Each structure stands twice: as structure tokens, then as C-alpha cells.
Image (cartoon, rainbow, N blue to C red; front, side, top):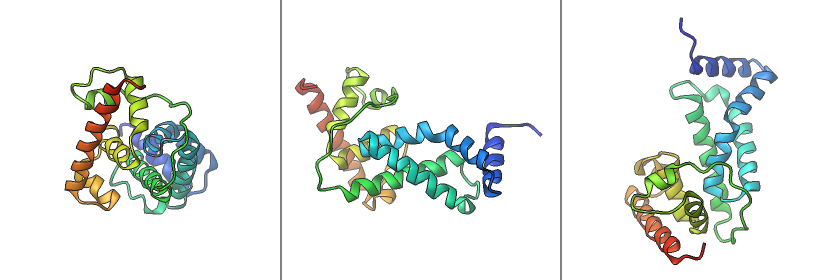
Length: 183
């Protein structure tokens, strides 16, 4: 039998189900950075992203029995992170967002997904942070997390056409911010 990375993750999950604390730590260590980044892109705040990360791992570890292995563990965990982050954004919908702290590793996907935007990644990142919550969430889920519009619609409880519309509006608003030169 060939030993694969997924086999290792499945083994860690089984060990976690058996109460192995070291396995919990290894899973956390393996996925925490990527899950933090996914949460950060949605909540747009370093401290809140840390809270989302912790809540997501606690929820995942308490619900390991519901992980059936149909999808990769990372995909299952990311869905929990995304849901926790979106719930946080919904709770603070009417609050003004605080200033962001450091952002850890923005992917080149941002620039790749925004065809025709000749801007530096850092400038695009700062512009995305200025988007209203709804725009930023849809843009992040689509471009950075790789969800399609039907999945975004299901996650956010909106129609697919609303997701597409929000995405197009977010790109337009992003372009306005970038071309405004205020970054």
C-alpha cells in the first residue's frame, strides 16, 4: 500500500477520534496557517481571524465523527472556517471595521483572478480590505477560496445570480479603488 499525504491525515483523524492529543496538535499545526488566511480574507481583521480559527478547530475536533472522508479533511475544515467567518461578518454587519494588522501571505491568485488589473499584489490586498463586507466576502470566496457561484449562494443563503452580481460589483468597486490612487 502506497503511503500518501491523505493517508497520513486520515491516520491523524483516527488518532484524534481516539483522544490522541499529539494528533490534535499535528492536525492544527498542519492546517492552521492556511485556515487562518482563509478566515482573514473574509473577516478582514487579524484578531477576529484568530478567533475564527480557534472556533473552527474546536468545532471540527468536537465533530470529527461527522467527517466521513468523502472530501479531503482540509476541504471539510475550510468549510467550517468559512462558515464561522461568514457568521462573524453577519453579526457585525452594521459595525464599522477596525484597521487591519499584518496580513500573512497574500496569494498571487488575487491578481490572476482580476484580469486586466496591472497592480501590485500589496496594492490589490489593501484595496480588497476597503471593500464593503458583502463584496469582499463574495470576491474572496470566489477568487481566493475557489468556490463557484452556486456554492457561494448556498453558503451565504443568497441566489446564484446575487452572488454573480455581487462579484461583478466587487470587481468594479475594486477597480475604482485601485484607479483612485488613494492606497
